[in-house]
Image (tube, rainbow, N blue to C red; front, side, top):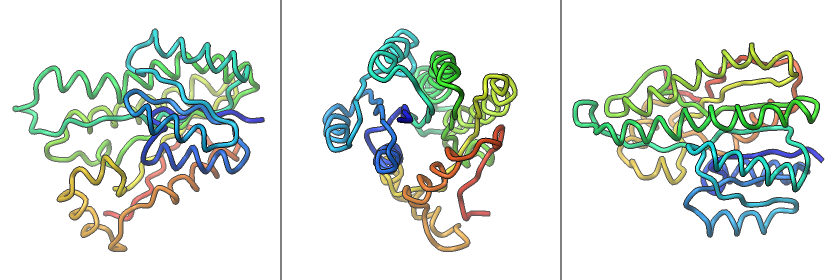
Length: 234
């Protein structure tokens, strides 16, 4: 049975991925930090799943999560780095604390998980690492300097690690979803409205469509170092 770890897996896109992969027969580790009730309910509703609490920005907690997964399944075939936060505000009004917290989760968190789990994926015969970045990592956005910087950094991390981990048969790719009506997106109603207006198709991205693309990517063996923009905005 193939196994996958989804960070930030209790809500939004993470939840959609957990459900979709479980339906395809994957064993799913649902990582969460604060949304305990949602994570436990989700894991109980899936056929072969476990909820694991860990702050991805803390390497000690990530190492403990690796031990839990190794003990339960003894392998890992895919890591999906989905956990992310944003603290919007103009740069000149952004505190050092807010800047550090966004980079800590969105970028350092991926460093922590990849460094910790890549050996287990290699031991399992190779597999996939998929980093969920953002269109703002390419285009930037007023009021999201920290978030944009973290997601741009994640793109650089992806293409670099694709080269480093290829000898271990680990494929590393980045997915850039469009604006989705998930919990994080819905919290910024005006931004969501503008995203829909800017869409060539006049619509937002759907988590189910993003999950479908990721399911396809997980079925490939010759795709690595790529950045997939799943959006309809210019």
